[in-house]
Figure 1: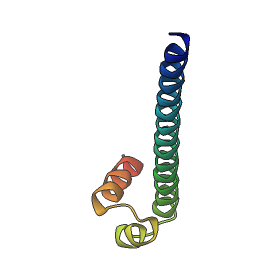
Figure 2: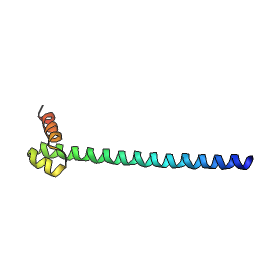
Figure 3: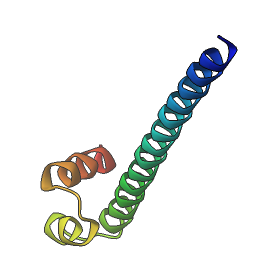
Length: 77
């Protein structure tokens, strides 16, 4: 009976560890994506503040035109 219990416990531990590893990987990926997005936004803000056009800012920041227009409206408000 003890051998069966140990086997089940070991399997449960493996499953939990695998879940934790996948969850950590997903969270790390989300954090990296959020950081990349924030860097794009800050870069675009700098371009707009320096007088660059919306088209130029879209092309170089890799943000959408809608996102850049929203940033531009906030900077001029």
